[in-house]
Length: 606
Image 1: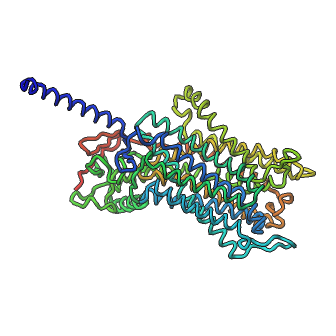
Image 2 (image 1 turned 90 degrees about the vertical axis):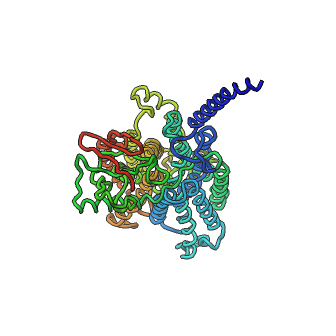
Image 3 (image 1 turned 180 degrees about the vertical axis):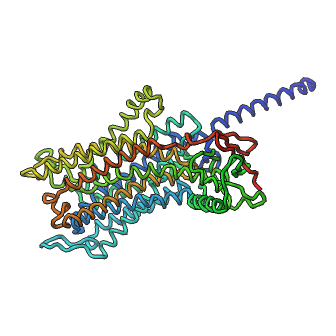
């Protein structure tokens, strides 16, 4: 019996070895390839993390945040005019300035996420700041001493400096919270899908569509349910309900931590960008030239020198920056990135520069979006909003014309249009992200044209206040359609073109254009006011019936038309990160890039 047992031992060892290898092979196929980790710090497993197991919680948080933001945005002009006694142009300027600050602050939030905190921690921290701002805003609307007393005689008493400071501090916290949340939440959602997995890549594109659907669902609830609550129960309830929803959403987001995949912070991208600029300028001044046998430096390891980021292949664009990776002294310390950068670090900076023309050529569209919360609302406030003798549409709810358009179009586009277009174009998403953005920019021209024509008709009417608010439907509908195409295209484009270390920064870059667009809207309003006679005699007066708002809309139409032509040119010349890549070969951790002009070979690290 012992001899038989001895003979069976090798077979058992072989069996155990095969089983172990099979288990390891199966496990390797279920682990993500993008270095994301789970909440315990281990490489994330696709079976238990990410995908649509995690995404619903992220989308739910976005619905809550957008509900709160739009509940403020669509009502704040009315609140400032009626409660804080500000003039219409001043109130509109304050709202666009606030929206602008909220979106420009996304760059700060993205910096913290990419450099230090990571996306999830950044979202949690800034959601808490956001919720605090909402609490203070609700208090401002609740306590009589924080607002001017009821108006009993003209001129009405305006808000004191202390009352304004308290309100604007609350709004500042909300803007800061928005700045931290917005650049991270879409990227954090996209992190839940592995780019190397074809099935998950398809789901990632669907996530962007449903993420935009969530944004507009939040907006739709804000301009219907929340506005109705405000109209029926007052400002305290109008601000208090979104506050409670925001707090609950933070708790739900945090409770689902076990399902998330996390990208580790990669350090400050701005420092790395500055190092590339300094090193390339330094080598240029030292007379470094790029030739056929010039050597570019890359670390001789499987991972890149940037913590948590994969290596990037060399591209042929912006060759001047390659001088930052030229090893001029083989004996020098290769760890000093102010003197010698890796190819991956240079390519990371190139990826940012590459998208800047696209970013700049879509800013004008954000000026059109700014009108949704300002002059579009002001038009609706003096038009006939009666649906019946018993029901009048609240002013803040008129934005439903835009929000419901997006809520309807996204499922139709995802389930019907994309499959049809994919069959004809061969593109898995139907059309490219740049083409989607172009469609949105084109539609925006007609949106502002409609706004100008309707406003002229309203103003020339013998009884402007009797003109139905449904005349505004075309401009709201077209702005919503423009947003559906452009926003989703931008989400996809800026995420795909970003590198591992710049995902949040890239998202912030595109979001910041919404803020810059709001500020540009403010600047245009001020310029038009000053050049046409001011608030008393100009195109934009406190009384819209005496204003020439249609002229203002024609200016925006011309800007959008010119912007569309510029975008066509920029998009035509654009080379994506992948199309600009030259052939790559890996050899024992070192890298060699070859094309028709140059041959680059990585130096071993010292």
